[in-house]
Length: 292
Image (cartoon, rainbow, N blue to C red; front, side, top):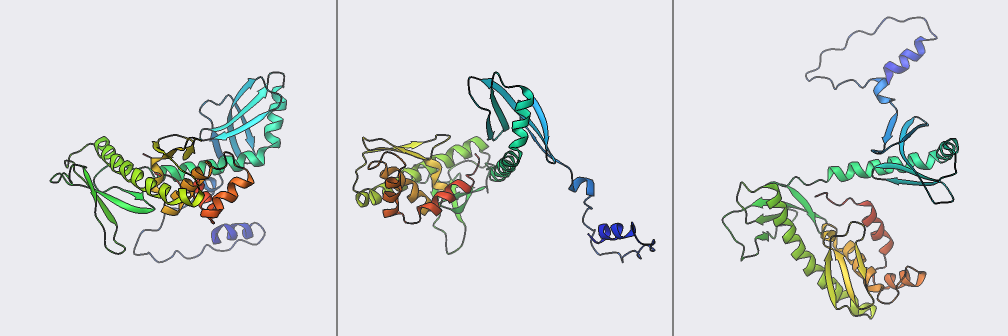
C-alpha cells in the first residue's frame, strides 16, 4: 500500500530518490501480489452458456433458453446463471433485462460461488486418518483390521474430555477409499436410525402426535418429510449436525402431522417444542454438509 501511495504522490511531486534497500530478512519474503491480479474481473461461466455480457466488472456467460412463458426469468444455481424468456422477446431486450438485474445476479452468483468453495473444502478424502463431523464434533477414522467389533464392523471410542473421538473400522490397512466410505456410511446410518428414533419418541408426545414408520432418506433436496399416516422420512446425513439442529428437523416433520402446511399456525406449533427453531433453521441452511 505504501508503494502504491508513493507512486500516486510522485505523479504530482518532484521525483524522490528510491529508498535504501531493506536489510535481508532471515526468511524469504512472501510473494508479491501484482495490481493486475488484484483487480482482475470476476468470471461466472455457465457450462452450457450461449450468451455473454459484462456486468459491472464481471464477465457473465449465461445459459439462455426460450419457452412458453410470459416474462423473463432468472435462475442462479450451482452451474451459474440461466435466463429463460418468451419466444417473442428480442435478444436485446433479454440483455437489457439481465443488465437491469445485474446487482441481484452478481450478488447471487458470488454467494453461490462461495457456497461451492465451502462445500469443496469439506470434501472427505476417504483414507485412514480422515475426519468428518458427527453430531457437530469431529470424528477421526482409523482402520483396525484386528477387530470385528461384535459383528457391526465399527466402534466409536468414547473419548476423554476435549479429545477428538476415533471411529475404528474393521478394515484392512490397504482398504480402498470406497470400502472405507461404505463402512463409515453404514455406521453413520445405524447411528442415524438410533438417534432419530430417540428424538421422534421424545417430541411426538409433546406435540400430541404419533408416528409409526421411520425411513432413512438420501434425497438431494429435502432433509425430511411427513405423511398424514404418520410415516416420517429423515435424511441420514443429518447426523453430521449438532443435536439441536436434528431436533429442529424432527420437530418440524412431526409438527406436519398436526398442520400439513407452512402457515403461521405450523411455525407456532414448532415453536412450542423448539423455541429457537429460527436460528437452528438458519444453521441448517448455512452450514455446509461434508461432500462425499
